Structures are given as C-alpha cells and as structure tokens.
Length: 314
Image (cartoon, rainbow, N blue to C red; front, top):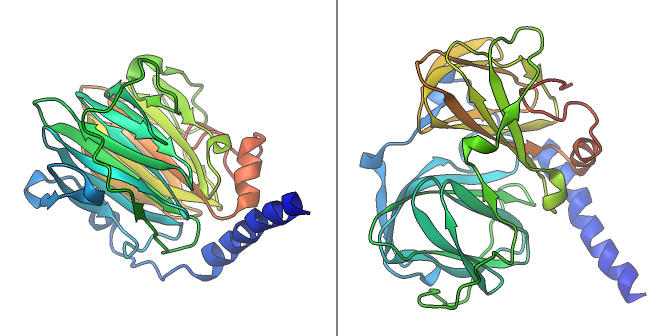
C-alpha cells in the first residue's frame, strides 16, 4: 500500500504539470526577435555574496526569468562569474531541477555530499529532491551558468544547508551525473531540407535524466557557412545559448544576428533555424523544455523529432 501511495504522489505533480503548462502561460510580449534575445553583459552583473550560504561572491545577471514571457516551465537562466575561493552553498530544490555549468577553468561540484573537480566546459544536472553546491577553489574567476526548470509553472523552492563545501574530501571520479560540453565530443549530423554545410551534433542529456519537464540538452557546432534544418515542435520550447562564434537565428520567420553569450528564447511551436555567418565555428547549446509529460515520454521513445534542430520535429 505504501509503495502505491508513493507512486501516486509522483503522478499528481506529473498531471499538474500539463495543467500548469497549458493553462498558466502568460501572454508573450511580441517584441521583435532582436529585442527578445538576451545578451550576456558583464557590466550588468550584480555582486551577490553568500549565495545559499556559500563562501565569497558571485557576479551574475538573469538572461531569462519567470517574467520573460516564455511559455514553458523555465524558471530562470543565470549567467555570470564565480570569483576565486567563492561558490554556492549546499541546498535542496524539491520542486525544481537545476544545472550548474562552467564554461572555462575548473570548479568543485557537489551532489548529495559527494564532491569532485570538473574541468570546463562541463556541468552537473541535479534532480528534484537532491542537494548540490559548487565551489571555485582556484585563483581565477570561472565563467558560470545556472539553469532552473520548475515542476510547477513559476514556482521556486530552496532549502539551504549552511554548508559552503570548502576543504571537503574529493572523489577522483564523480559519484554523480556529470557532463562535458567539449566540442570534440560532437559527431556529424545529416542535414535535411533547408539546411547546408557541416553541422556537428550531440544529445548531451536525454529525458531519462530528469523527473520534471526538462526534456533534453543538446549541443551543436556549425562550420562557417553552415545552417541547420528548420524544425518545429508544438510541445517543446526553451532556449538556445551561443557558447562561441556568431551567426543568425531565424525563429518563426523573424531573423536576428547572434553572438557569443546570447540566449535565444524558443516558444512552443516556434520554427527555428540557425546559420553561421562568421569565420569560426558557431557553438550552440539547446535546452528543450516540454509542455507535458507525455511529450517527454515521446522524446524518450524517439517519437516526433529526437533532435531539436537537426531533423524531425512535429
């Protein structure tokens, strides 16, 4: 009987997810695409000491938040710098899933009390109900990103542990899920109608990692002159982030230039395509967030467009 009640307890949030995602979406402000894109600007970083009881100081800004007009359960996308000997203290999210990403250098990541050093570009996803922290043990600032996707739309929770994770024992091999965003891990992708050139791709994280509406994390590299296949998915939104390079985003008929540090919002049902207009590879990261749990399970089973901008879609 207890096992059945626990299972039913997870079913209720899953059912509620679809209800919140479909009925609770705010009206999207139809500004031009160029105005909807968020730009990383160190001049806008705000100093934030003692985040979740952590040591030292972070300097960061919000690229997207709950008021950004997106129609998925993305709660925020933060971008900034972890200063030397600084970090985010240990904390739980019981209704959110989060991932810290470092784009350079190295940092000590903790999940559920186990700590390992990851070398950037790298990250570690954290499921709901598991605690995590990050500490920059080096003498150099680390470029950092934090992605938070909530189970219930516009709802956030956190429980701080008061643990700064300074000087803790380290595992040589991470005892938690960890990812690398190194472009050498990408492989060739077949480009469909409307695309062209050399496009490299990798599904970094699939929907089997998450418990909530976070569908996947994909990574792309476009050679100079290359373009992805235009794709549409009525039940997957989220954003793209430009890791490096420059190019052009074409979203539902609108076009805007993009560059390193830009975050491009994607609504449910948007048609999306990207082109490299520069002389260096255009490196992109896609966070796909589903409208409901049924769509997540379809992606898990390879139904209706496994690759966000590589092919398929619906």
